[in-house]
Image (cartoon, rainbow, N blue to C red; front, side, top):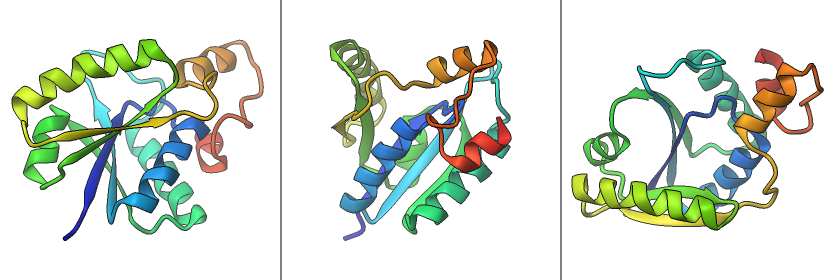
Length: 154
């Protein structure tokens, strides 16, 4: 049986926190789909195709040969269902993340009832994409918060 998981997010940018979740998931699943969600109503700070390439390079450098990176416009649950992916991976930093994720999970379960959620505890609860963007806006060095291929494009 091929165990597939989906790890969706804006990944704007992809951080070392995201990488930690991918590392944990890649051990448990045969295929891990890192899906860069594109919300047409929101503008991105970093180009999604460049971010895709940087995540792919990071996965290759780390030896995660079971990680597939895609850019997707539309509902994540629809993508998962169409591709036979039954597990949704999410990282949790705190109880606010849990409450937020549970609300989204409820909606996704309406669309794709067979989908199961798996939560991983985040190791560095302070690191987030929004934190990296804010530090960058003030000219701060963020190289310790993102993988090298991501740092090269931001």
